[in-house]
Structures are given as structure tokens and as C-alpha cells.
Amino acid sequence: MAMMVSTTKETDMPGFAPPLVAERELLLSYLAQQRQGARNAAYGLTDEEARRTPLASSLSIGGLIKHLADMEQGWIDIVLQRRSGPGEGGASAYMDNFRLAADEALADVLARYEDVGRDTEAVVAGLTDLDQAVPVPRGAPWFPADVEAWSVRWVLLHLIEETARHAGHADIIRESIDGAKMYELMAAVERWPDTDWLQAWKPAP
Image (cartoon, rainbow, N blue to C red):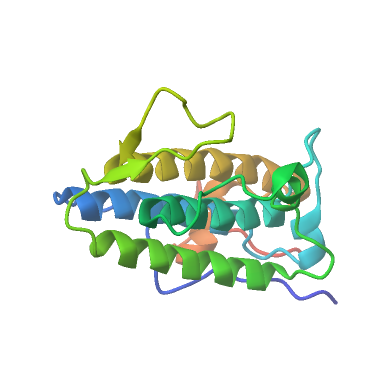
């Protein structure tokens, strides 16, 4: 029998980000919440299920999480000027970024995503100012030619936006695989008590 993967970690959080007032911590909290949403969509899946593409697109849950990890790391690399950022390696590398290959395991992709999240939080915590300039890379059509720099704040808001978009994609894909819905999966991951109107997802017997 294929092994299912759990996404439960110490960083799990309930359905709402906490009501923080410090901007840096609030932005990081919202980003962590959206990351967990993507992870929740993978809860209980086997590697084979994580590779499935049940919709008209070629997206899979495993591929989306792999892409989210690479995307977030790429943006933090831009902030630190470690490399030019997302989109390196050409079209083939970009498409591979969305696929969970046959020799890749969902557990490993999830573990890497967790490592990337920790790196993001450490990097942002070490910056003195969210207004710090982040030079706009050149050479890819999605980078604006008429903007010289963003701010770290802009990058964090962009990460929240893109992570949330792909977490939504993952929710739809997961429901198409086995009918599991977002709140049912969140209840299972967070171990919420069952109610008359919401029961935690459970694997089929």
C-alpha cells in the first residue's frame, strides 16, 4: 500500500492569521498561513496522488508545492541579490518546476518548502527596514522595464498573493482527486473537534 504523507507541523495555525500589530510579523504570519493552506491540500496524499493532474491544466498538488518552494526562494534570492531570481534556466526548467518527477517524493518537497519558509522568516527578521530597495531583475517579460526597484514590503505582499493563488489551485485539484475540501482538510490537520456541520477529513477505509 502506498504511504500517505502528513503535513502536520509545529507551525500549524488555525483558519485566521493572528491579530498582530507589528507589520513585519503580520506579513510573515499571513505568508505562513497561505503556505499552510497549500500544505493542507497535500494532507494524506500518496506520491502518486500528488502527481495527478485531474483538471484541464497540467497542474498537480506536488508540482504546485515544488513550484511554491522554488518561487519563494527565488524572490528571497532577489532580495539578497544572491541570483537574478525566479525564471532562470529557460522554458524547460520553468515547466519542470511545476512537476513532481517520478524520482521525487511528496514528503521531500514538503520538507524543502518548510526549509524555504524558515529561511524567508530568518532573512526578513534580519533586515533593518521593509522599505529596503530590491532591484528589479531584467531579462524576463514579467519583470517591468520601467521600474528600477521594489521594496521588501512589496516582495512579501507579492509572495502572499502568489502563494494564496496557488493554494487555491491546490484546493480545487485536491477536491477533484478525492472530494476532500479545504475546511475538512484543515480540520484534520488542526485536529478540530467534529461538529454537526463540519467533520475532519479521514482517509477512505
